[in-house]
Length: 246
Image 1 (cartoon, rainbow, N blue to C red):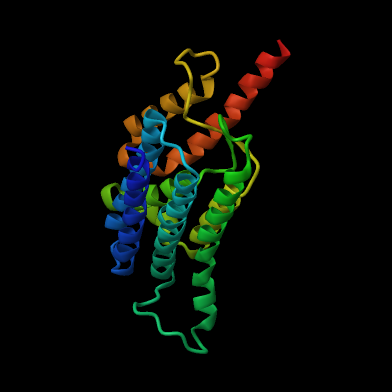
Image 2: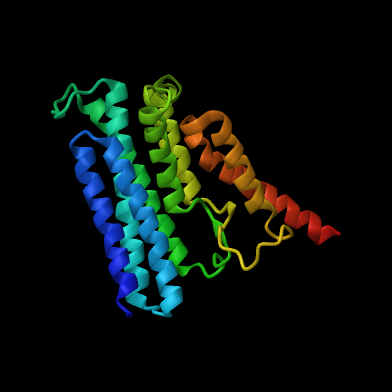
């Protein structure tokens, strides 16, 4: 029983690896579904570890290694593919003296897996992040990337094309998500010890805003999930500060 969490973590890693294969084959949609599967396995490994009380140092390290692949390398490669398409770069890409500047621009997507690795390394030694996060969690960063892919493929492509079709927008998106991961901005953890409104104001606000966004925008609202998460986190800080001053 004690090996079940590590087995589930291995499924997370497997999903991330296969996602990379699909991206290399030019299929970011299937790759995004596999990253979503990795997120589910990432949740289940922690849940099963708590349920079975099967904690281990190996499990902690394995979880971080899997997350680097699934939520750092895999979405970073999707960014690479989308950026290449926005720049009109044909595949396979041949590096020449003329194409070197474009290649270096494409390599900017490497910032995402690097910052994801830094974020996870910091998280592993930071004991203050048990009930809240400092910096954007790596699954949330990956969700921001795949939500754009889903909105583009299943929704109105004209809306998301303003992001995926613009090299500048893709570079800004990559830089913002990467910097948020290594920032010290306090953000909500979805874990809670009770369901009362008091103390969970930010979480309920996030649920309400997300439901309303999808009710009015459908799948096109998917890219709003992470901005709403950040907004709800900031609102939660205001609620806590107000309650502290009362």
